[in-house]
Length: 422
Image (cartoon, rainbow, N blue to C red; front, side, top):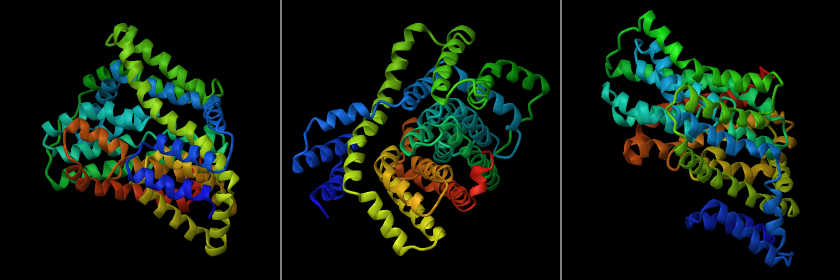
């Protein structure tokens, strides 16, 4: 391999093992590669700026902000009350409430960490009070949070759509059925756990309680209808939908619910900005990484090697999923998509896989990585809320991860499952 190839692969790996933040690790290896090859150093800042010049990327900060606004404005509490009156009397009712509320919140925020934080902050203490162990309650909130990358609008699909140059609206539709099936599977785990441990059920809600919850929650329930209806009705693009989400959440939080004060807005914006900065820094530095990968022809060479040595598509997909599962357990999910994007696209093209179907496979893997030990992003959000250690939560995550892998196999080997709504 050339010196550039060594820096981009082994050099990048060493920096990650040393604990260097992903964005800085990418920037360092790109800068060193430019110096080693005598390329004009100004290429790095130019590619950083060029990496931000995508209209679709504007959806990321706005969806991040929308999630924060909805949490501060009380919409997450309203969603939980609506879910509660419909399923609390069933076995495992409070776990079902957590999953159902997260699924609805995911259809507004598009962010897995935001969904885990908004729903987990309320439901983890509530489940602990009702007889669930705190580790299990945390595992439910973490697992439910990763519905956000699948159920549109999804930040993960936005990022992959930009990388693969595919229709974001079509990618959104490819995540609906997998997301709903995963939610159903998580509910089955909650039911099984409650039945096994004799968790007491709650009284069935009266019609008066149901009407009150629906009346109070109407503004929260309208949010996904407006966002998704606008996208698929052709009223606005996914990026514009993110802005609509922010305006809607701000209006409801300050005017309708009146739980959000204008003086809180700077703190809300600051919290969303910090998370957005992490995501965007990885994306923009990866633009230079991608140019060097293309220059070295690393992606086509790897894809050619795979095509020459693995002749069956199903075997290649199995290998890809296994590698992805291992890598996602130790590497940031967004970094995986932007760093390995060119290679993954080349592999998909060499095996004639539909780019939309392949996008669904990638994002399902990314979603699982957000919950899987040891460094799943949502896992650490849940641990921060519950105050538990990684070992406490990891043990009870296994059934949930099993459900996620079943859904991944369906998405991978039954293309119609992801493409049914195209």
